[in-house]
Image (cartoon, rainbow, N blue to C red; front, side, top):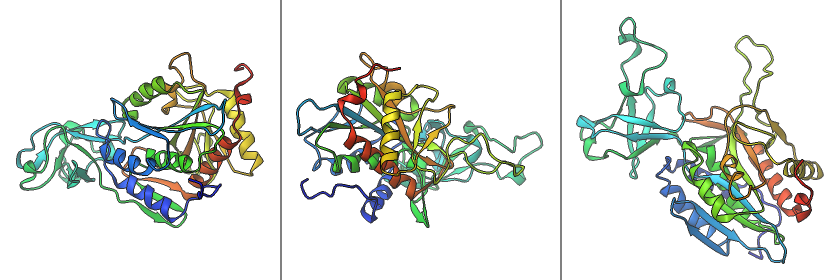
Length: 359
């Protein structure tokens, strides 16, 4: 740990780790692939690590001085996807959605099924063969099948998870991949543990089942009982031009504008004291940032802040386009600046930040 440079930088090694995380399958309730990568990464960096009863990874890097704040960083390991619900006669499996997925995007999408990443495709009747009265815009999930081909019934079983078969890639200034919501947060916490300041006790909570109700975070926060918590996630960048070419004034966040600090979302009113600490830290080091526009959605902070006697919480996210689809598009600079902001804020963090009552 003594040879680790002070400032974290996103380089080839960090991008390679994100690629490995993105390409892994970890649909909610079956996060084992990502958990194995996380454990391999964090064990050399922390003083304690354990896996709890739900499958959360809790990694503790103790402070090197007395009276330090205990800070929880949370990022969910799970992703949206599918669960097979039939025995797959002739290699055709019925399935259910796991997490929020727009049914309109499903027909024809390649998928990976089970721990062996068996290739398949989501099958539906071609649009030019649909009969009058059939809805061409959205086909109900119970009319779709995951097609694993001849003999596919022997390659998977009821209860197996499946996810989109998107392969991670870097394209110019952008990173494209599945499950960057929230493998970006997972990779970010790993780097923050690698560069943890001595002045705080830093607990990385790599949580499960966020996409189906923030379940892992609720358990982790109760066990950790930190002084404050930061949920690190990805948030929709609804920043495309409107259909008529007019200015988009209802955007959520924008690509290239830096990390998104949450004031509020559907489940959390962020702690103003921590918001101001993040803003001061960003401005002190010239780090670009933006405020996530109020609206729907939420992060693990929605469960964390209600545990025990209440935990001061905030969320910070990397903006990304096309959330909950086969591919999320993010800007590398936004990820780098998110890491810089969080590292700067953690280095500057003292008990004074929470000394005054919450407004």
